[in-house]
Length: 217
Image 1 (spheres, one colour):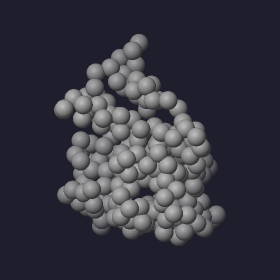
Image 2 (cartoon, one colour):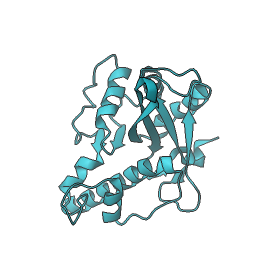
Image 3 (spheres, helix red, strand yellow):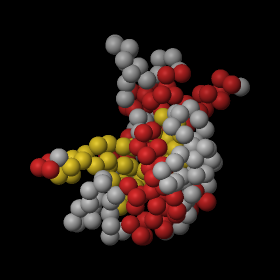
Image 4 (cartoon, helix red, strand yellow):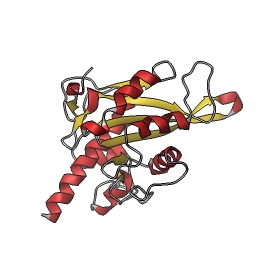
């Protein structure tokens, strides 16, 4: 499948699917992802959720959904990828460790490239941990945990700069990504439920960037 299969992130005509990456298909999907940054898909959306993988042993993992977008808003392969990451492994290969994911994103040049932008909604800590793991335990000087530096954007923090966006009108408390999307008047698009939040995060990021540029202009 060529990267020309990319589709715009606001395209309402087809469903955007999530590919679950496990031990069995890790090599194939790693080859696919490995060429994306060099092909200018340098904006990486990340959605992070904590899940329980073994209730009896209280073993937890991070479920990460990752999508690659270029500056024009084209989504690589018209898809997102899901990884279940833990320091515990599973017999069926459905759970990967952080080192495996770190090696994958490092192979595409996403962990030490100042031209790459990581975009998330309350996921900065996990992204920093991933980047640190891929770079021998250190954060490169071009990427840091500060949310407003060029290479790491947390939409949950960015919206605080815009009056009335990201706060609930009845309580004045900070809302979630769906509240931000409604405030920005973004319409829903067809997507697997697991991809919905990361795609909204990327779309909100693009809209906020447009608003920021308009203000500066």
